[in-house]
Length: 297
Image 1 (cartoon, rainbow, N blue to C red):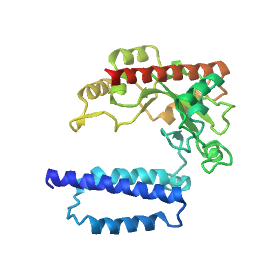
Image 2 (tube, one colour):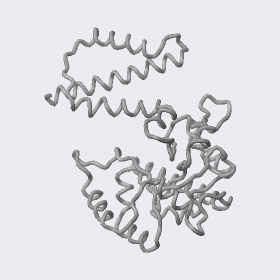
Image 3 (cartoon, one colour):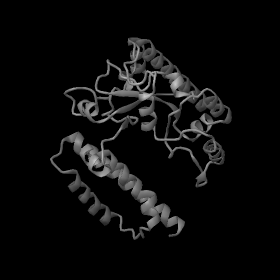
């Protein structure tokens, strides 16, 4: 497919997705007695009449543009029973995702201390998460407690997650709908991940017999001109040659929970939980200031 035709197809698709989102918002906002799927059919018919463009939908367009959105939508709507039937068991880990209203104990509700919670609420007044609020249409705390073992909470800049949070995985009696929480190292994009696995950081982690669980989005900044960032790739190859234990996070957490003499699995002390809240809040404030200074420069 010619490049200009591919670009036109992508732009058309993005426009249709935006229109579909607007239709869904209007139906919800105005409480219209119209099924969303019927409204989408009407939108498609109208678009076909108003935009009589003949575009070939190639396999590349399907893989690049259509498939990611369909997979993401399916993941958002999958029922936990369907998940069990498909994968043979319940999800072991839940990671709250950004701005999802059904997030459990998220936003200001993940923090301890009235001052911290007030400050966070002032900085992000638009955030409200209701997954743990009984009576809310978004409530699923009972399901989380019954069928999910671990939930990720704070992310930190340091590579040794266990050094920062020795009690993980831990139970927090003040947040009873989560069985066990854990922290992670912040590798949220390509730049942070690449910085995290610098040679000196990995060497120190190995020397101190530490433990690192990394949180990341591989869709954010890991590619350059369609290929893996060379610095990141080089550091990952060097990391793979080390005698580390590279396993899924759930397996690491199970090991920490069962290790002899370890504190994993018990109730976290208030002092450690408060320390985690303070450290996370200060690191996020610093990141925000750096971002603001970067925009000014």
